[in-house]
Amino acid sequence: MGLDAAGLTLAFARSGIKSDGSWPPEGVAVFEGKKKAGTLPDGVDARHLRGIVKNIAQEREGWEIAQALVHEWLLARDMALAQLDRQRDAADEEADDLGGRITLNFIKAMEARRGIGRTFWLLATADVIEEMPRGEQTAFLRLAARRVHASTPCPIASDSRRCDS
Image 1 (cartoon, rainbow, N blue to C red):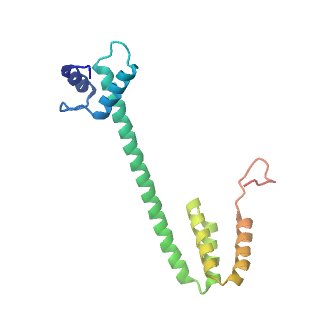
Image 2 (cartoon, rainbow, N blue to C red):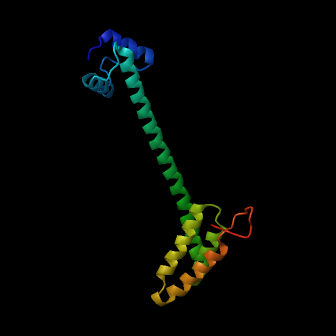
Image 3 (tube, rainbow, N blue to C red):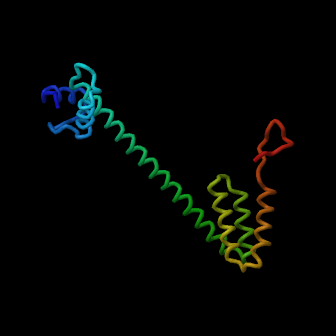
């Protein structure tokens, strides 16, 4: 590798990276690749390898953090959807017929404070409409579309006469 073991041990000790004498293969590979490509600076020593290894360690850490964040976001989403599923089951029990289920689902969609809730309840409404006989679907789809159109919030703007959303 062109660096002596004592220099490597000292470089790793200074960086806080523990090593048992077998250097991290990615760091050594990057160092060797740069050496073969002739892209290492003149007079390079173990500190350069230490920097490479440190960068790789930071990249790994960033990857692990990103994976943990995605896992937690998905867990939170699943918990929110599970709660909404329970609410939908309760609403289905409360309704007398398909029309009542559509109405309850739609009301819940319009009352939802977050986008995920609104989308969930609109999809629940669509699911109920799909359960209906083909001939009845069109009338209920039109009714739902009119309600969505009529209830779309219009944010307060400097020009309150128009709503672009």
